Image (cartoon, rainbow, N blue to C red):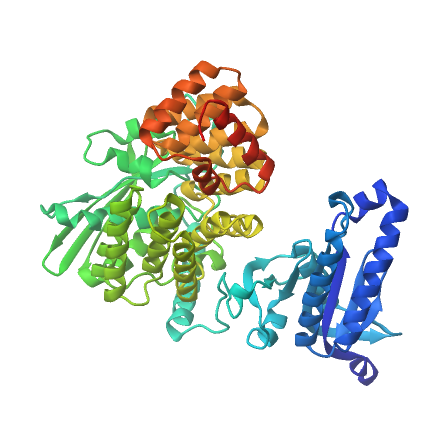
Length: 626
């Protein structure tokens, strides 16, 4: 035992390998070996300069250790800078780019080599790095975050091969503008007492839910069968209608709307439940239609409907779950309480629906589902109004959305959702040209995302926002990482799936994007026109210009005043050889946006592959657009 302990030590582990090494060897083995040997000399020299030691170098890999994480990171940055300068001298297809991963961990030393999970984690972290980049673990980050003139981007938690617990990863940023920043935020290593308490309560609720799930006498059948039932997964499906406001005061509509929307958001996090999106269910607001009719219309089995009545400082909420196939009420209940109990009611109703549907929940999910929400009803009301403005996508409503969210923050300074909405308004300013400085707006959007995630790192909407920021900064890998995280946290979030398609399209993954947008349409049958736009873009990038044209025509029919759709129609017609129609669309485009230029197009189409953008601009220029 003492001998084994003597072989163990804590060290900074450096792991590097070559991206695309097999391809390089296949194309020119001799040249690849020569370049590799040359680059290894550079790597070894910097490792030695910063008091490190090369442990092993099999194939294209380099394994080293340092006494200090600071030294390891400094050496890595210098290595990548020097190799980048050397790569500039080579043809693009012969450039050799290393990925570097660094971890601070416990290792076993023997015969001059090091082994153990610390080494394995460094290798897995290396795999998350971009070619020519450096990625570090959370343990390494904690040692260097305030000691080097660098910045960092939090890449989230990653479940890596042969490692039990998820690994937190950070990308090292060397741009002088990023010095001292953690642009993607990182969760604090501790949580305030109320969070610990909330999780504890959640676990109790989870245990109760498990008990109820296994003692519920009523069995729920398969998903409702309709004319499109063949396309519906076997999981149960539900549509949550906007709760009716029975107060007699339309200014209190936010109570019912908010109740419905939060229940949708909570239920949508359950992977085995199909939850129809808010936009589709809210289209029935104020209409008289049976649950069976809605079930057929939306292809769902279950309908949740309810009422909210407020009188002075008291509130009554009634809800019922209806089987749309039979019209039978499966569960109903009424909740009375003080207005301050409004959010507790939302959680209780959601929990009872889940129990009625016999969805077996894990404790981890329970902790996320019953996380702390806004504790101030007035702040909540302000934010609900702001969200409605945000969805209108014009300059004036964007400004009003920000003002309402800021009022919500004044009422509740720890309201993560308010920071998130403010972040979206600044992102819209940058993307759509609502502000004088797009760069400043984008930086402010990121600042708001940081503040939101510091308060609530379990909100998928924050990672959705981060994906948008990174995408329009053309940081495609970070955009995809964040939108995947948002989608994992909220698998039924239709808009998140739609935005996932957008990120994947621009990142060069149109096949997966098409699957994602079609899933979003299933979850949101009353989807907004930008879903058609993303479907059109997927087909466009896949080379099916006829299907692309059909999707963009659908989008134009619903929102004829959107210049982005018009421009894509021009491109589709040019690619199909239909120049007369292309010129007609170009004229309509200029009527909508008279100041349209190629610079405009570059600003709104953040493709990873520049050639796609150049081909589109050539098509636009072919019909006289400049």
